[in-house]
Amino acid sequence: MNRRIDITLTVNGERVSRSVDTRLHLIDFLRMELGLTGAHTGCEHGVCGACTVRLDGDPVRGCLVMVASLDGSVVETIEGLSDTGEIRDLQEAFVARNAAQCGYCTPGMLVTAADILVESPEATREEIREHISGNYCRCTGYQAIVDAVEDVLKARRTSEAA
Amino acid sequence: MKWPAMGYARVESLDELWQVLDAAGPEAQILAGGQSLLATLSFRLSEPSGLIDITRIPALRGVSVTGGTLRLGALTRHADLGRDPLVAAHAPILAQAAPLIAHPAIRNRGTIGGSLALADPAAELPACMVALDATIVVASRSGERRVPAADFFQGLFTTDLQPGEIITAVDVPVATPASRQTIVEVTRRSGDYAMAGLAAVLAVTADRTVDAARLVFFGVGSGAEIARGASVALTGTKLTQATIAAAQGALAGDLDPPGDLHGGPELKRHLARVLTARALGPFLAPAEQAA
Ligand SMILES: Cc1cc2nc3c(=O)[nH]c(=O)nc-3n(C[C@H](O)[C@H](O)[C@H](O)COP(=O)(O)OP(=O)(O)OC[C@H]3O[C@@H](n4cnc5c(N)ncnc54)[C@H](O)[C@@H]3O)c2cc1C
Ligand code: FES
Ligand code: FES
Image 1 (cartoon, rainbow over the protein chains, first blue to last red):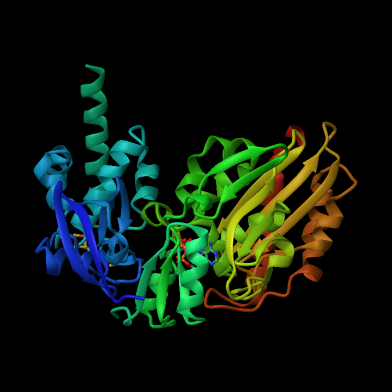
Image 2: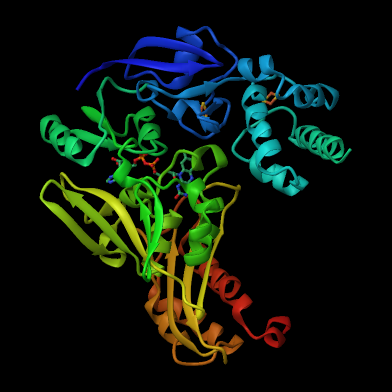
């Protein structure tokens, strides 16, 4: 079996081809090979959520994905989500609500929060908390994050109704 | 820690899998969702010579119903269990279990085959499969084998899987109108493995007589533990507060929980009794529920 694998994948809309070491997880690949340093690593074993990115449309733990396995996949990072404007309102709400302090958790938190906007537009505060339960924040106490997500859910519902 | 050096191969069919397994030797491991395996590599709890990625094998995918059987392909993700209409209709306990497993990002990758092969003593799905009396479908180069869930799980992280075998699917008997299925657990934080949990599958007639009951605990022993005494205490009689109390009493003989980092055996016994009442209470006659 090979320890280097050739892969071609799409990252933030661009096709990328590389020969990668099997030891590399998706976040080290994004940060070290592609210079996309938005996604962070905290624990590197699946518990903190700092590494949350979108893979084939779904949020995943980047530290629990072997990049060698990603031939043909589509990856979106916080850089991509920022560039497309998909979560501009969410980012503005995080600023308005002071939902980021040190910012370490913020990229992962935003990717998870973006999933709430798509998957459960009617989410209650309880459901927002449940959905972000796998994303640790050591600074904010979560209250401001839940406020920000709730604001955006309400605003999007209102603009859709209008 | 970074993962150890290892090989990787992706296979596209079962035939290719058997070839690669033969060539790779016994130190290679199957990679499905990677949500347990890759985490254990970070801890260097395991150092496989290589990983064989089965996630692109079409034969391991899909959810379908044939006759009285719901078939779940081994690659069915926890997130799929939570939203598949066939699962909700025919095995509602699995739809209820999905949100209890880890967090959304992990449920988007973790698979039913991986969870059953791992046999974590606090995992939800092995207990559900025993409670449902499901059959684990296992295959190797030499063919297919069907193993009742109760025989498949053999203790702490131990199953009946033999070298060269993989789980291809799970066959679950579909729920009947008499089926009552529920899963409850206690965790300190949302998404954690359970401190104690209970998967209960009953058949209850219109006059609330319990024709069959299977109470299966997790997180209180070395695996999915059938509470035989409690199940017998409920069977053949109407479900009442009194029969629930009898089932709670029978747990003393059913369970022999070890202490763990959450607390001692007495804590686990207490939680098991609490969970029994929580699981069965909703199936009581409305008048008794209020009591
Ligand atoms: C932070 C965190 C919290 C978690 N919380 C929970 C929880 O509360 N409850 C819970 O149940 N799980 C929990 N998990 C584990 C998660 O459910 C895993 O997805 C699951 O246990 C393994 O499935 P997988 O597809 O990821 O398997 P992998 O990690 O790919 O594999 C696990 C093992 O099974 C073997 N394997 C995989 N598929 C097959 C197959 N088809 N045939 C034979 N062998 C196979 C592999 O070789 C490996 O040994 C948690 C994980 C994390 C990281
Ligand atoms: S770095 Fe991936 S979950 Fe912590
Ligand atoms: S803002 Fe510091 S960890 Fe969340």
